[in-house]
Length: 320
Image (cartoon, rainbow, N blue to C red; front, side, top):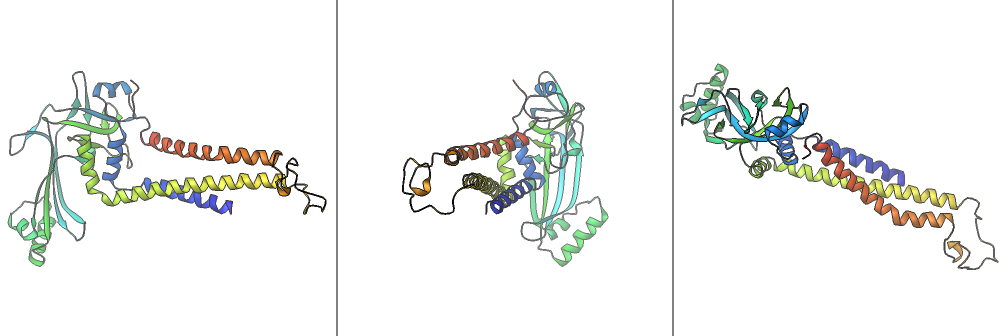
């Protein structure tokens, strides 16, 4: 039975670890933004390359471009989407305009690899929403002729389908927080599991936006945590059972299968089977196991939780 519980415990822990590493870019962006303490560009420079950091500073650029409201921009992303039912939106076009920009403080600046920004961008989003027929009537000039043809076809076949145009911008008037890998003196993406994250909002507000977009992933995260706890508990119970089996097996070696008629209850005999108190080696080990194993189990749970936290923020903190 203990072997079965041990197998189930390992299976639950494996499932929890696997599930925790899944999720979209927005989910990973939220985890990274929540798990890293922001530092200044000067402190980031002192940390050196190949560190995954959260850096906070002013948005600066040698040359900016103006929007329709004459705001000096360094990055502008416009997307056209149509509703495919439920919570699914299909992107028809994405137009990005950017110039080289950096994050700076009074002493230094760090270049941002803006080309690596995907779903890790969290800013105040301007949005238009209407029907596909209204989108076609607006006479928007799409870059791809195939997109223009598709919009015209949808306007004819399904004119009431919902369409959406979103606009995301970064200005030199903003103060930003960037989470990324410091490599070659600039912040960039650290791979699939570590996207480049940039927000011009307060961290709490950015996390609120990311959380509202991924309510389903919150449920998955809670289930993963539950599976992890169950796995640890099952593994602990299985280990306690295995230790108990070993202790009982060692104490039973050489024991008679049944007591003789002359045997009577003797509290000093050390044999719990005839009414005594188990004071022999087997009884002592069992007592120690009963007292110590719950503490060991609690320490293992605390160590596992600490390891997960340190793994997610490995190499991200700078000693003061």
